[in-house]
Length: 138
Ligand code: ZN
Image (cartoon, rainbow, N blue to C red):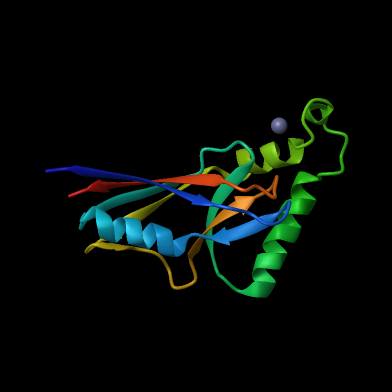
């Protein structure tokens, strides 16, 4: 019998480019779901944010944000900036992706030791960013 568990978490971001560790929320959602084996989708319903899984090491987090800033070029003369000054954030979201999928094995989120889950903010600060968590399985 397949079950589906749904939860929305809300986080705030403090800077234009920011990484918010949401690992605990995702693992808690998997626990609450009661699902033993299946998949966990982590999805940010935003066009200017993304989801990644990587190591929570302070220097690396700064490196990732530096790279995203260089990649997306916020100061470039993007056409979208004529109506909304955040083209770089849309491009970052499009490239990095607004979701990540994880296995659920034996009732736990299966992730590497150095794979924490982060919301990537590229158009902050924002008082509210939503993350939808769906756990599906049996
Ligand atoms: Zn925009």
